[in-house]
Image (tube, rainbow, N blue to C red; front, side, top):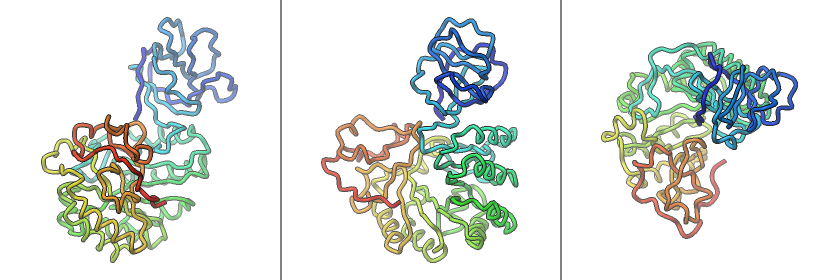
Length: 381
């Protein structure tokens, strides 16, 4: 998440609030954080003040000496802590906002960019308040982790809270699907009755032992059963496949497996690996230049797409992909961790390309190069 630092004043505990820039709102100031260049003549009632002034005499909670006030937008939601760190937990201009349900997980994926924590304080109360502060016109919200289903029934509280405060928003629930092997739990999700919910489940091989090795748990068949239970209750399902040295060889066979066993899925996404967290720890075992699995990726993508399954490629650079499948690539990297290389500036595909993870600047394809013509075609929507 994006973070800006300043000097904390009178901050005794974490403060969660919605950013306001004009200082004119009269109602609900207790949930608002005022951003103001001039720290004089500040109305009372706001939960905190953020200012670039370095000379502040405030009795209320304040973060001073903040240099990048132009990073704040009316309606953003931030968390301020005692160190003066301002963490953006919702950005009104972003299309990649997500609720971080928990850091715990019942898998330990070999390439996980955010390894799980063994224990933590329950985040549900925080997340319920966060959802209440998010703009009601938000179009899409993710629920991620860790593994969100470890919340048990509290997961459904989050979904219903989104239904209440963002009634038009679609929800993408990222889960390993294991908990949905329990048919009664899958039914509870369906009974939430959300109008636009997609459950995105990773699957890494058509061979159980290979999938289990990658996720660090013997759960392949539970994930499969979870997918069938979700389909039984007419839930929309997406599948995600992270590509690396342990998965790329069987991408064509995995696509056949998906078509024959899960023809009900709404989407399949092939994802380039983010080289941080466990992926960085296991770099030698996992890394392969994305260019070197283009043949397998092309076979897999076209096999599914030609059979009528919506197929997408995430986190990939257009110049590295074969021209035949560039149209399947989408801009999927979250705004705050998306970047481009200097050589990308002269590329004709720059505006359509999703770039690369900031953490991948040292670990990226050697075939990234500026393109002189646009032959991307139309992406799947």
